Structure formats: C-alpha cells, structure tokens
Length: 394
Image 1 (tube, rainbow, N blue to C red):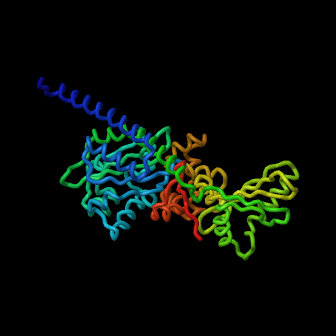
Image 2 (cartoon, rainbow, N blue to C red; image 1 turned 180 degrees about the vertical axis):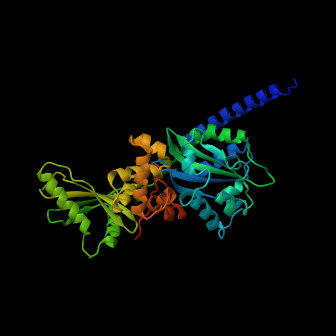
Image 3 (cartoon, rainbow, N blue to C red; image 1 turned 90 degrees about the horizontal axis):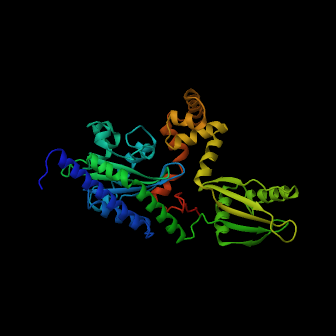
C-alpha cells in the first residue's frame, strides 16, 4: 500500500525504532563476547554501518571516575587516508585542545551529562561549524566537515566516546542518526565495560600490587615480582641512594607504631616521575617487628585529589575542583555540595589563583590531564575499572 504525508513519516519512524532495537540487541550480544577493546570498536562500527553511513570512526576511552580521555583509536582515520603518522599530532592536538584547553562544542565531558548523550556538530553550532576551533583546525582541513559524537554512558558513568566522520560527498548526519546513537549509548557503554574487565583479567598489569615482607631491622625477607618494579620507581624519587627507599622505612615505622595502639596506619602516597605510588603497611603473624608493605600505582581517582592538595587547596576547594573535572557546571556543583552558586564561583576563583590557571578547561588540562597524555600517546591499556593501566619507568 502506497503511503504519503504523515502516514509515511509514521512508517519511517517505526522502521527507525525497529532498527534501533535490533542494533541495540546486537551490540548487547557482542558485548557478552568479551572482545579485546580495539576489536570491539570494529565490530560495533561494522554493525552501525548497516543502518548509517560512516566514512571514518574514531573511538576514545573515558575514565568513568573523572570523565577524562584515556585512549584514542584513530585506526580508521589512518586506514582511509584522512590522517597520516606525520599529521596525526595535528589532529590529536586539535581534539585535545578542544577538550581541555579551550571552550568548544560537544566536548566529551558535556555530552556525558546530557539526557541524550549524542550531538551533531552542525546542529549544535546552528549551521555554523566554523564556530568550533576543532572544525577549523582539524575537521575541515582534513576533509571531514561533518561530525557526530556520542558519549557512551551507563548508570550515570561514561566509559567511552565515539566520533563518526563524513566527507562533503557523503553529506551531513541527520537528527535520526543522533537519536540512534543516543539509543545505543547504554548498550555500547556496557559492552566497553565488559571488555575492559575481561581484557584486564587477561594480563597481570603493572598496577597489580607488589609486596615486601620486612624483618624487625627492615631487612627484606620476601619480595614478590611486582615489588622490584615499584622499588625501582621509588629509588628514582629518593634524594639519597639506599638499599630501601626512605618511604618504605617510613611506612614500616608508622605501621609498627600504629600496631602498638591497635590502629591501622594510613597509606603513604609518594610522588614519582612516573606518577604517584601508594604504600600500605600491615603487621603479619609471626615474629614481632615484621611488617608487610604493599606497593602499587596510585589509582587516578586518588591521585587527582593528591595533586590538588599539593597546590594547597582546602578540602572544599578540592571537592569543587574534582566536580569541575567531571564536567559539572556551577548550578550542578552547587546542588551536589548544598552551597550557593556564588560560593561555587568564589571557590573556583580561589582554585584558579592557587593553581595558576585561568579557566575550568585550563584546570582540567593542568591538574587532571597531565598524567594521562603520555599514556594515551603510548596506547596504554586500561584496567578493569577504566583507569589507565600505567607502565612504570625503569
């Protein structure tokens, strides 16, 4: 039966909804297979291409604790000739600058907070994409004027973001395309989360803790393989060469002192050239005076507040800065902390003064993104909760 007018639009909407449901089901099935991260990207992109034209896809991991970028997968951009190893730094620089150093539209952090976490560049800029610095520096010069972005969010936490590109010949994305990606955001996020957990389980990454067992005179009685790696990092951070880094003997002494009063010692966080290292002490069974010390890379959700504390931020200022890093605006921060928007603004001014930054984006770049960039460039894998599983320097 031939349909026209409103009936045709209803029919098209029903077909689109059916396609979205089918695609969401397929993505969920793919997610249960525990594919490696990059392979999962390709599998999902292939399925999406069955219903939507994509000239190139670029996937990014996002740390769900702070909405910071953790990985970049520009394989299709390179394979299709849009960027080369020589020009990749230009493209990456434009994307990173728009995320962390200046105001630009459809940032990953902003998409992650939206009711529909997907957006088309031309729609957001109301037909004037040149308002976007990213468009002027990367998209248009590289022959990719049309962009659709989607944050991949489940249970309020973002696990990644995908950017779909189209050339001038292919034409712009449609509102229906954006709606489809909004619908797929949750199942893709859950697939990414499952992939990370299984992928992390396949390897004993550098963040797997190492352990030292020290005797009463701090002689090493036992060291697990991971401990040697961490000790090398800590020795580089020590000002004097010793058989054991100073921080290890300090945590041992604190642990013995706390044990005399039946208390658990606080962990010791040590800054190094490769990032923060955390030491945990405990008293094992056996001869008196023995101490077990666990050494591990400090997780990012702990390291970020430590960096803020190093700038002499007050506890409340650290809370505000952490929420700024998550992409919350003034009103949302005020609601979360039960303070007025004016108080939030006063805190932000104090934070900028103490950290030497001039905007929220500069704060994110200097304090939160500093440790991420080298690891992203080196294609560092992620651990089971989406943090960068960082290697440590020798």
